[in-house]
Image (cartoon, rainbow, N blue to C red):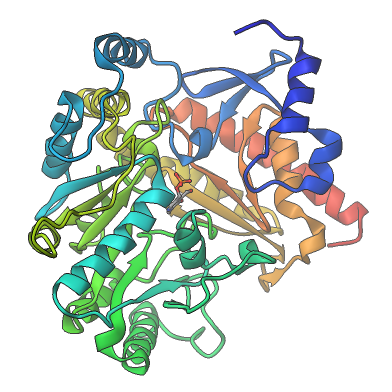
Length: 465
Ligand SMILES: Cc1ncc(COP(=O)(O)O)c(C=O)c1O
C-alpha cells in the first residue's frame, strides 16, 4: 500500500468509511482515532500512543494481537491455496479439519458446522435453517422466534430484529409480518418492580413463566425457536439468575421449540471454556452460534453449529434433486479456517481456558473493589467478561440521566490514561485479551480508579451528583 500522511488517512476515513454504530453528528467533525499497531494486550495509535486493549478489539482478540505463528499459518495457506468454492461437493482441507475440530469441542451432539463470515450472518443462517427444518417436518406454521429485551444478535436484517436493544432500531424498519418477539431480559440488577423482592429461584420462575405464557399466547405450533446469549454482552453484561438457562431449555423441549445459544462472545475461552452453554450453564442447546474468538479477529469467521437431530432433517432433500440452498461464497474459507485452527491450537497449547479461570475471578474482584465510589452501581460478569454500571448514588441505585453521558466520560478518562474500555450508556464493558496477566489487571484497575475519580469531579462540576 502507498504511504499516506496521518492527515490524509484521517480524511479518507472521515469522508469515505461508513463506520458501524457511529454518532455522525460528532464523527463529521472529530473523525476517528486510527489504530496502527497491536501486539499482545496492547494497541498503538497513529500518534504512537500505546493503550492496554481492555476490550480485545471488540470481544474477539482472545489469544492477543500480533502473533507471528498466526501470520505464518495464514501466509502459508494463502500461498498454498487461498480460495476455492465450497458449494456442492467441493471442499478444502482447513474447512473440513476445522468442522471436525468444532464438532469435537462443541458439547453433546452438536456435530455439524455451517460456516459464515461473522456472527450476524451465523444468526441469520441459523434462523433460515430452523424454518427450513420445520418446513421439512411439515410444521410450516412454526415460524415465531422468541428473543429478549437487551439481547444483541447482530446487524443483518433478521439479527437486528432479534436484537432487543430497541433504541438501535430507531428509524430503521422492522420485519413487516413480524415473527419475532421479545421477552424480559434476564437481569439480576434490574429486576422489574414487583419482582425486586424475589430471590433468585423465584426470579427465574417469573421469567420462565413469562416464556411459557408467550408460547401459549402465540400457540406452540407457531413457535420455532428461542435465542439467547448465555450472558448478555452488548446489552450491558447482564447476568441471568441461576438455573435460568436450564429452566428455559426445559420449556423449549416441552413445546418442541429449538434453543439457539448465541455464544458469539462467550465461546472460545472468554468464560474459561470453549463453549459456556453446557460447561457453565449445564444446558445443551440445539444450535450454538459462534464468531469473534473462533479466529481471535485475525480473519473474519462465524459458524452455526447444529445438532445431529437438526442435521438429519435438513440434510434430506425437500424434493427429488432439491438442494440445501443456503450458503456463502466464503463459507469455510480456507484462510479463515486455518486461522481458526491455529487459534484453537494456541488456546489449547497455552492452556488459556485454565488461565482465564485463574485470572478471571481476580479481575472481577479487583474491579469490584472500586465499589467505594458513590457512582459505582455494580460490577458484574464472569471471568474475562465484565461490566460496570454507574448510578447517581449506589445507596439507592438511582440512575444517572442519559445526558450525564457517564460511560463516555469514564471511557475518555481511561483512554487518556492508556486503557481502552467500551462505553454503553451508563455502563462500561471490559473484555481484555485472554492472555491478560494479574499485573495487567492491576494497571487496568488503577487506571479505572483514576478515571472514576475524574468522572465524579466532572459530574459534580456539571451538577449531576
Ligand atoms: C452475542 C452476539 N451475537 C451476534 C453478534 C454479531 O456478530 P458480528 O458483528 O460478527 O456480525 C455479536 C456482535 O457483537 C454479538 O455480541
